[in-house]
Length: 305
Image 1 (cartoon, rainbow, N blue to C red):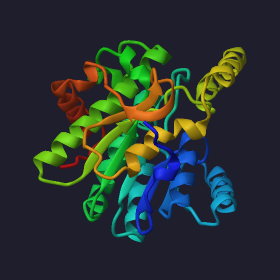
Image 2: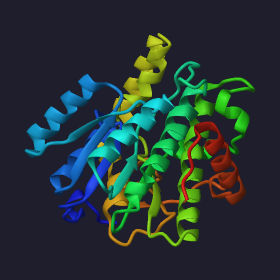
Image 3: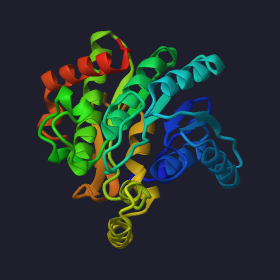
Image 4: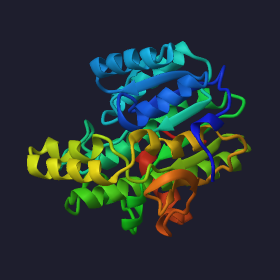
């Protein structure tokens, strides 16, 4: 595939919300969307970092990015963010569920869920459900959910995993959260089609990209050696964050994108131009997707379709 960011169409008049856009993949996604005319809101937990990112985006593009305070690890914050956005705007064209945490020591969300599943999946599930009325007001709404090739190491997910009731292994929990992202993407697609909606639900993953994500988790536990080794390995092997954002940008902006499809880098899914890739067998399990949806409704108190 010869795709490049120059192939992104004119997005003037399109309203986009990107979570976790203060750095890394989210920042690069917001940057390209702004360059191509979109009206972009960056949603993140830290207001100071959001202001810094918005200033940097302004310097790079000459355009203003809106800021939305959002802590995906706190469902009350998700609700407040959705209310704030809905009070300002009457529609949303594209939602990019990008934010995430990777391999921290055991932590809980405000509601007591395991941090990775709570943030990477449940927070985005609740945000999407609460913003669905605005998405359905758009002419061609699209939800992009960012997963990882590491979802393939998770063979299933159980409701007990939401609270790590059977123990905690940080990389296993990360893989399950990324499996949950794809199961959510596919079930959102199924529900949208069953409702006769034109909403497009697609997934993406960045391959192996240089961001702070690989070292930030170990740093939470004060494991400086692990964090340093991960950072060194990432810098030696990984592609840039800008290149890692290509699959998300491709999924978010390409006209005629089939709902339920999934995109990643072309070279063994580690690096390169975006292409259609295939989720694991577990990620294509419709019963598991329906079960996860039901558990997520119970956990968050919100539903969609």
